[in-house]
Length: 540
Image (cartoon, rainbow, N blue to C red; front, side, top):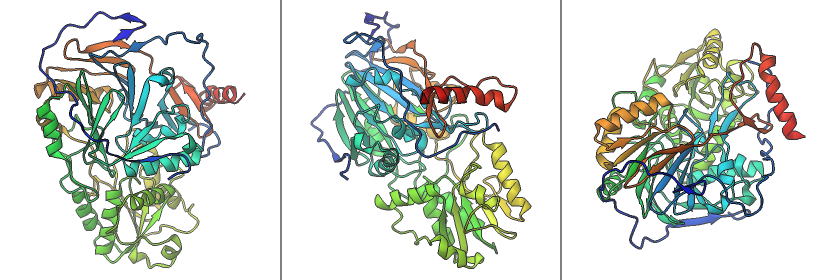
């Protein structure tokens, strides 16, 4: 790797364990190419389509070299732009042979700690300066913390987007809303497909998670193979989609993996993660004996949970109505991708308004207490057509994301004041995580046997816990990155070799603005002022 046009001093040499390269004559198994037209304090006024961030014009003379790392032929550079300092905002860069590959481009949602800010995303300026060398973006799955920045950052990033059918459907819908679809080249692949992007041989491996079609991405190069696991868990009964391709993971491990970039979300939690079939059984049991209407809230993207709620409702002679825009959007994407075929049909809001309450289930957005989500409106009698009343039950089929506890408790207090029974995962087994716990991680290391471990997807606490576990599993070295670190992965000289500032953009709902962190403020006015000034300066 060259850095600022000068060769950096090599890190201490490692071992010489051989590693298989991506070889053979694998056919390109991409199945489609979809182009435009073809297939606390005061909050800013919000809308669904904030204006794209207009970066100040570059002052570098034409033809001048871009300062920074240039990946060599004997190495893979790994740069996490997000996802290694907090949970969310996942975006990673892999560099090899002078080219760059992006994996995921997500957001991190903000709570009451940042009034006026909906979400954060990685500032793509490092990528934009190198667009001639960027060969593509590969998407591991369709959760917002992995794809939620795409519709904000295009057309600034004009490289091809590679995604599974379900993820591609969700991405296209978002790009349509922002007018960015005409700029995007979305290339659809089936889970398990292999294809080449520049000097990178891509092998996707079917895994299981809390959304359809998650994949791990094995990246094969002449310098070796790395595995980017994405989000995953071992689920023998996922309800929606196939089970994890354990044979493919073992074959990959047998061929040799230089490094594994692996999910750390539950690295400090003992045991194994439950199956979606366990959540279905818990919901069926929780529905028993309820007299009034039942409302279930969870993450809209969990199509398996949508299926489980439909089956639990049918087992108790109830019908399900979807409440909330995200629920309807995800149901549409799921059915377009061939899922929910066995689920009982959902009823319309109009039909729900005259259905007896003992036969009714609301499947709602708002499991995190979001102010404008369906459950919050129902709790405050703010929904135009539906309501909750004494004798009804609300089941939270999701865990509280850290930081959302206060707003979530407020929604639950409103429900209890109405005489509504509240059931959480602490009361009944109505939720399972989508991420591996410690015993699952040990099993993954047994399958892959990487030489090096690079924990990702978590806070520093999560990453450190994962690194300790990886060392106990026998890896030669575990490197704990922070956002902006530059890691050199190679047969010799694997190390953290540099760092760049990991800049952020903030979505106010109206604009994308540079984000420098939370200011120290004595009151809401002091907190809101710098944000308002930034918005005004960007609009000028």
